[in-house]
Amino acid sequence: MSGFDELYQDIIMDHYRRPRGRADLSHIPEDRVMENPTCGDSIKLEVQKDGEGRIVEIRHQGQGCAISTASASLMTEFARGMSGEEARAAAARFVAALRGDSSLDELDAMGDLAALRGVAGLPVRVKCATLPWHALIRALEAEA
Amino acid sequence: MGGDAMSAFPTVVPAEPDIVTLRSEFPILSREINGHPLAYLDNAATSQKPRSVIEAVDAFYTSHNANIHRSLHSLGEEATADWEGARKKVARFIGAATTEEIVFTRGTTESINLVASSWGDAFLREGDLILLTLMEHHSNIVPWQLAAARRGARLAYIAIEEDGSLDLEAVERGWDPRTRIVCATHMSNVLGTINDLRRLADIAHSHGALLLADAAQSVPHMGIDVGALGCDFLAFSGHKMYAPMGIGVLWGREALLEAMPPYMGGGDMIRSVGLESSTWNELPWKFEAGTPDVGGAVGLSAAIDFIETIGWDYIGRRESALGRLALETLEAVPGLRVHGRAQGRGAVFSFSFEDIHPHDIAQFLDREGIAVRAGHHCAQPLMRHLGVPATARASLAFWNEEAEVRRLGEALEGARRFYL
Image 1: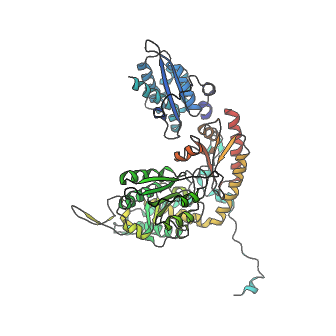
Image 2: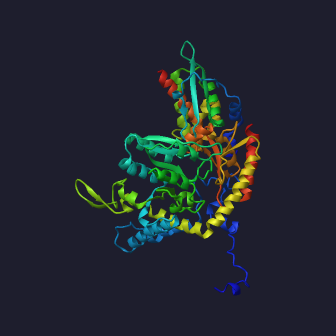
Image 3: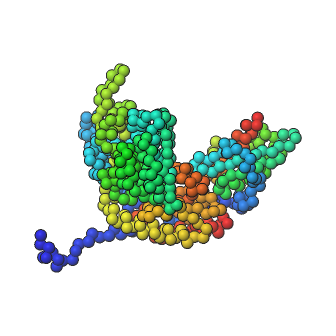
């Protein structure tokens, strides 16, 4: 599989074309937007939890490429049912694996997120894939 | 003399450089990317390096390497001659009045920071105005924001017309008497607009203000004469004009540079150092603290030779023709919008699809071996003005081929089919 094909797998293209959790978040102030300094992309997040503090949905809105859009969509599905602390730990694991701070094999235990493996060899694109996750970490830390 | 006698002979026309030979001067063009021959359309980000430049740098480190201005031995003399020889060549290349007006830096960014710090801290007063343009690169915005914050000065921006040119009428109409310096790019790295700096200089000078010209984008594409341009400072980088990364130039009028305090302290920039204070070296060394990039300057000197061998006439004709083809090709792609339509624009084309992100476009083009830039191009105020977070950008050089431009058009059609 070529680098391009590994990057834009069907599962990524599916989440890009039909992003789960995408919502109108115009009620969230602009100063809470998370930006990617290399490309000007931005994302806003809202974490919705149930009575027991478990994540029901992570809603997101932003301007981004297929990779960052798909990553946000996959994140919503992945974090559903987790506590804030579990989601924060998972986000940290995901970011570390993509940045090469830990083994990429970590992704194999993270379900569909393994589809983002192809990003790891492309340092410029790592920032696209991790942007929503940095935003999640910040949102959960703001709550804590 | 002898005009009649000579007319019997055919006029000698210098041979047109042939494109295949020209391209063979760039070793990197033999690379394949993802199974395709490299189509390098990212010249505005950095130029590729011709063999003569690579060999000149190699020869410096192989045969002449020594520290300059201090090592009293044969190699030291050779290296110093290389460094100062490069300065002379740059001075001639841009029409500087004296070699003292040429300060070597790491690049355009450092050149502008030098002026914003040194001139800015010495001459800006509270309430003074620094006039920029909306199409500046961050390197000609942020140093001025920092200077303005230190000095209590204000910033204002020259607006951009629909076609991507500067609204110079508005500059004249709305001139603020506290304006001390105008800082403008000679050629936009996003819109391709070539600004009428002569007119801007005349406006600024008629009010006693200065003009700093960012020539990073223009210097590989057109002959620059600082006298004709009328600016007071000119900044550019070697790496966009076929020289290595890490060497750049600040040109300033001698009287201005003379009146400015040093930018960085260290070796080579002093006359004498006491325990409490020091005195400064003469121009241009006052602004060149520390061991500089001598190999880079040797490369810059070779790059000037390379450009002059090819000649501005050929470079201008080739880039105009390629630019026309690129504009036609891009306009033929359904749904694609090209940013910037100013008269006489350079061969730099930023473009967007409504529903495809520039990253995804660039990644698809890379699959086809085509290198373009995607992002905000260090011009976020301009991106906001255009109403886009980012664009993709193809930028051409005289050695590009028509076939490469056509490949770009075909690949963009392919990207559209893939993502939409």
